[in-house]
Picture: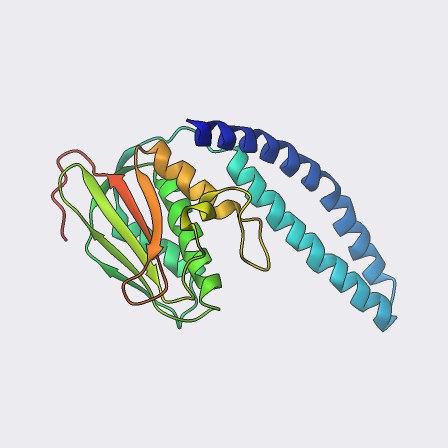
Amino acid sequence: LRRSERLAAWQGIARRLAHEIKNPLTPIHLAVHRARQRSEDPVIVDSLGAIEEETRNLQRLAEEFAALGRLAAPRRRPVRAAAVAHEVASLYLPEGLPLLVDGDALLDADEGQLRQVFSNLFKNALEAMGGSGRLSLRIGGAGAMVRLDVDDDGPGLPEEADRIFGPEFTTGSSGTGLGLAIVRRIVEDHDGSIHAVPAPDGGARFSIEWPAAAGEDRDA
């Protein structure tokens, strides 16, 4: 309950921050564009390029805050887990880092929010592994819950691993640390749970318990 209250407070802050960050970005971008058209001085061009790059970073920051702030109640229906995972992997993973999927299941899920879960977990793993490595998804379980294990072979987890799901936590050189907070919120809104543990072969494992669709007969 306390965690839910804290995250609700963070969502309110995130909505306001996203709004305040986005407002000045358009005029900054237009001003930089006009300045670049009128100058051939290499020092000025390089400086404007740096401003553009930081503006893009601010845009990504605002999008992460907005994503946390606008999470709505899930609209749940039967969704095939492996198909969604493969689609997300094709968008976010480089060609040299395929997603290895073992098993499948029909989940009771909001498909858009399930995509957010996979995209945040895959991007988190990609950053942890430095852009290359081994990423796998194991889908299985029995009864009313499906287990989804996302394993990478990165450097592993920090101490007190569950702290990484807090909105204020990040170990990356970029980003806000909001991605895993969004993942936990979505999973819990679907009456599931998520934990981070060491992977059996090294690296990190994000283990999710997610409700199965009614009458699902899993291919484990």
